[in-house]
Length: 114
Length: 113
Image (cartoon, rainbow over all chains, first blue to last red; front, side, top):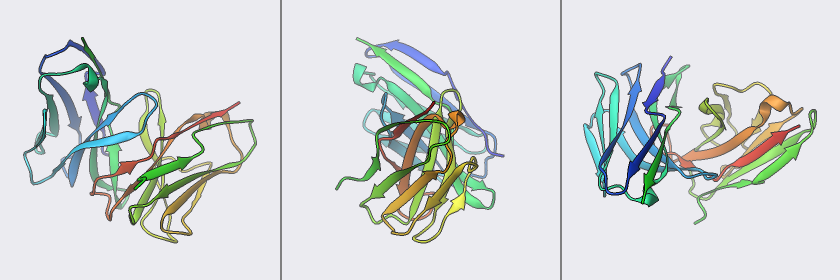
């Protein structure tokens, strides 16, 4: 059974700092890995999707990497801003119970202090 | 283009009552999903649908039923609500297979007393 772990559970940094969020998964047979952002009381917003054949994806100040063989992904946020404060969720797409499903980590709650 | 919408946003039920949560998407997506999010548990898949008229069980289907009579709508029903079903429920959709980006609705906060 696929399991996704995110470390740390919470992170507090000063504005302007570069930071890395970590995600690990137990089964390397994945189709892709997605990073989502969730603001308090809101739904999830997709940030980046990395296909299993890719090593990284970039969007603005965000860069996500994927090392499928070791079961790890990182989300790098450059020059963090208070508006980046949110919970970041990692999810992997793999076959579970005979069909393709997303399995989510529990998230990392990020606070960027002005 | 509203994306994925959910109705209602909040609801309080008494144990044993029933209710239906409505999810609608205007992106012509084939796949639709219902998740629940609980503190310390993350998001868990309840049921999903791979197309109009089809439904399938996810990780935590017990106590819930679903229907997909129209492509754009996915309904989640609770026949006899229990306090354990207190949660935030999210609907999502994706273009085709589950490997595509999923788009989420804003959520429904349900409390069962």
